[in-house]
Image 1 (cartoon, helix red, strand yellow):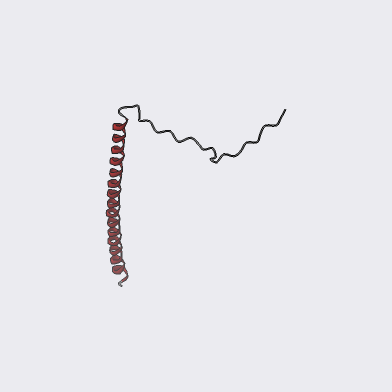
Image 2 (cartoon, rainbow, N blue to C red; image 1 turned 45 degrees about the vertical axis):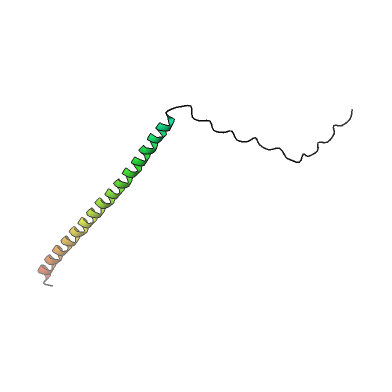
Length: 87
């Protein structure tokens, strides 16, 4: 029995098969559902940005109020200290 003949390398090496084309969705309402979800995400993102802006404003107003209160109390205490010690 004779040995099998060696295989010659072909000019083109084997390649992978081309990717399959995506088939259109079978659900007729998926496009509308996708639009609805995208709109809801956009609305939620915008509302989140607005809420962050409101929170920053509330924080700054509270901070200014506390600084004002601290200065007011400090000056009041300083006035009492001057009256007691005659500074």
